Image 1 (cartoon, helix red, strand yellow):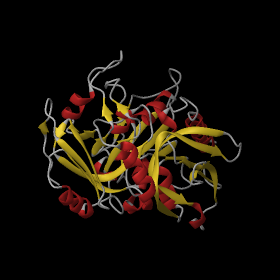
Image 2 (cartoon, helix red, strand yellow; image 1 turned 180 degrees about the vertical axis):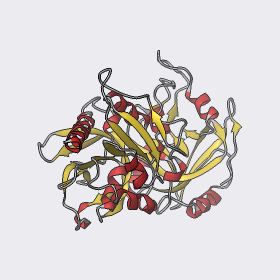
Image 3 (cartoon, helix red, strand yellow; image 1 turned 90 degrees about the vertical axis):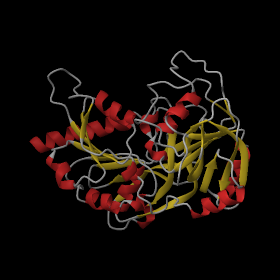
Length: 383
């Protein structure tokens, strides 16, 4: 779809959010003039809009923030999860023109203009969110370029959507790279080597791995299992990422070849890909889990974590027949699977984001567990 990049500062334009089912919401443009297609979703987080916009998992999606006031603490260079925003568009009730925070290095309107992000405000986000909860998330068009609402609805119906689409190739790195230097908890140590398969990895995952003392190598989504194993990793992390896990069959094939060779930790899309590699199936949730307040129960202890999540698909564990796996975490809102562990190989995964700090550190123990698995693997390999 053609996209305009005309600045709108000081200029008010009528804006529309048009859904494929014919529902249209009217508001005002904020940032750039143009239109963009994507899956219309909602996020219930009260803060963290910059992390949300730059999370590669949102590629292909137009995000509606349920919290009514967005932008009051501005933007900065630290709260980013990738090199630039990945959302297709942004929808809010009210943008704050006042930026007040000691960490701020700019305001949200300039940020949108710099990164060519189309955004709208004065949308009834409560009504839009209720509509998506009842009808389910759906394809849509966000437009600040005027036009006929009925024509926008037709465009929404004809847009590509995300089901079966490979969005990972649009966000993965182009070539392997090392993140953050050699890594080591103590000077002179031989650091553990973690290879991250990048399906749209968030930077904080890489930061935590490096802070834990690992040497972190990142490889593209299309990397072959034999090439990854040739790097002699002590562990492999399967990252988060956007879209439908069924849209990347080439990844699933390579993940299967890694079983039994090294510990594996999957996060979000990483869990869904593991589920498919186990021989199971995934399914699309009605409106997904997107926010920093999702309650998840750990089955072994009964402990409940408040987690940060962003996903529209889930694993159907009952369809996994050929691999011995067990459920480790369950979402308390809808009962969907939030964690899986292999009972033979050192492989585990979670559907939520342990690096996103909703607790703020409740889930960091998962990274320590992964490190422990890598240490044990190295010891057994050298025995």
